[in-house]
Length: 382
Ligand SMILES: *Cc1c(COP(=O)(O)O)cnc(C)c1O
Image (cartoon, rainbow, N blue to C red; front, side, top):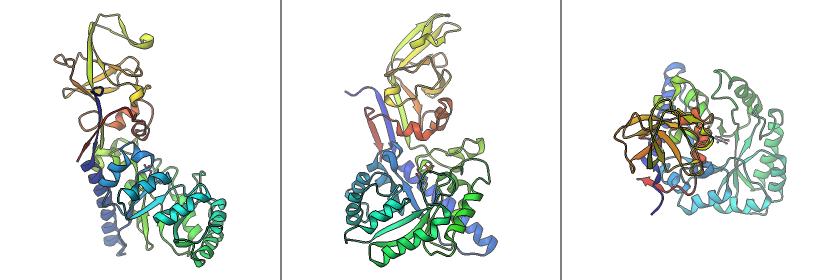
């Protein structure tokens, strides 16, 4: 028998969240139509499934995001795996290809690539004949990680155009990634204007918005051009924001990943006694402590402090003491009927929101999702 810990991945929740994104964009589109009488096409949606679909499993994501227009990821082997799983629509490599040997794979499997570095252009120039590859030219509008400077966009576009004329490339689009779409309102103004200047009258599709920009500035996804959004975290039911009015539930997003583990043991400790490594929690009165079969080696954050919420038998209680490798401890005083074998919901549909746990642990839900450990058995809800 596996340890009594389970992650649950809800495919209906993933599909629902994709629909939420579509409805959100459609609402913005109708709004624009009513206000400036301009008719935009509905933006296309890449479902971002990098990092094993943010810990939710590649295969689960491919099935649940069947209605997406494309999948976007980082690892070429994962892209090939998506094709083997039967994904026939577009696949975008967010960081492009890493070496010349990747190119025949892109050709064979019809995989779209971002192009962010001059070395990639040189590799494309040397590429043996094969199927034409669709590309997105990546422009650095202030993130300063990947991409060409806006002032180089036109020159690099001409490089790509020449490769297109040689039959090596198919369509050429443009993409950029925001550093602060989740930050202060207006933080996207400068990158947007840099992007506009960069691509000006160059033809091609455009892709700007991650989850934060899609949810907060959906009008940026509306363009006279073909336009693609790249939501990730919101598809998994978490919020990219840390504001009160922009929580995941306020957008109608449903948590797709849940984590629970059983009570292995119950300890009655006396006032003044402590629990766990470092004795970081000392009971202020006689307290019933539950020992839960989940630790940091399962992906529960070790930095979660005493007070981090858990839900037991529908009642909210709290973590106490330090999270250890295979166990954590909780306060059972609010749940007098809790017994060994009861499930403790650590996050997800029956637990606290993963964004809340991330907040307590001083991180973001992205990191918790990605850190779900391989050793945790996963149940998939169809
Ligand atoms: C990860 C990533 C996204 C998705 O970001 P979220 O904040 O999860 O929506 C979009 N675009 C690029 C280039 C990314 O690397």
